[in-house]
Length: 345
Ligand code: DAH
Image 1: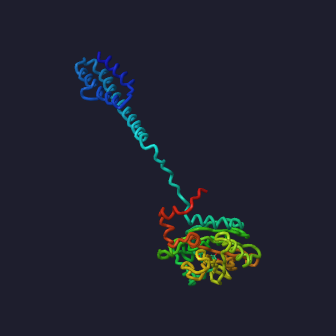
Image 2: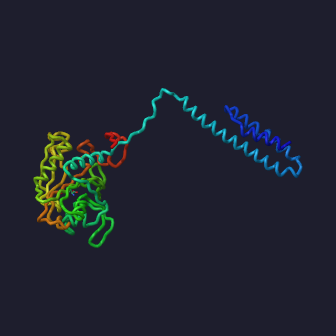
Image 3: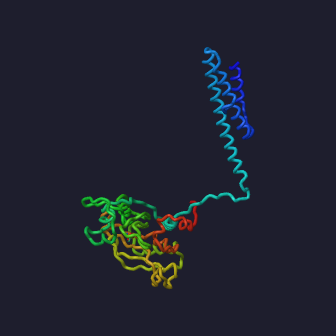
């Protein structure tokens, strides 16, 4: 009797397929409430003979669990269907939600442009470590020990080490040294990277920024090659009507050394606040690699000569996009970043 009923309900539960939310509720009322059929079976169970109790008790419990599981499952299914319906009835005329596209960082855009121009002249890209030793950052580059020239660049020291301190590189010129130490001329390379200096952060100075170093070493390389290469670079980057001028300067690692100015990109030479009314802005340092540097890197300075140059990517970017505050580059404000063209490759 009781076992037949259990089997009958078990089948009913298994086959139950609700068509609506009301069916789901009807299922609950039929099987799971205090006055439901399963409760009735438990009541009837109290009066069966002790011999029958064992097997009937087991199937009765299974029936109860099956009912509960079924109810949970159909409830979840209906909740999912309801969620889909809710979406369906939203305003179908609304425009879709587009993807938010990122854009390249302005410094990355300019670095890429610089690299592409030099690539056309046969320069390859090389990189070096940001944590550098004194040898690669200073000594090999002809900075004499204890010479005030080292103070030109406020260094972040990491570790004092007898004769060869470890520091964050203050310029990408260290990569020149690594390149020359590890290979044989000719060298024709462009070396972009981040550099660090212990400076108070302001609109015009930052404790880290980016440089691109250039190096060209071969037989018979002259200052005329240096001028022509950099002139080509400026024309490609800023346009054909941009003028250049070289001023004598000093760097420990070049002799002779120069700084290169270009005619102001903003006022075209007429005089404005950017060029401090001079019509010219400095964009890089350069020179013929000092023979001492070549010898420090085991390169025969009687056979080989060459030029090097170094420029700040922030400075070039400021000129190209008229950005007046250096801090914008590292604040990651999307209102600033999203103004730059989006490039996918
Ligand atoms: N390293 C220099 C600086 O950070 C820039 C520089 C000047 C690099 C002259 C050179 C160079 O390679 O020849 O200020």
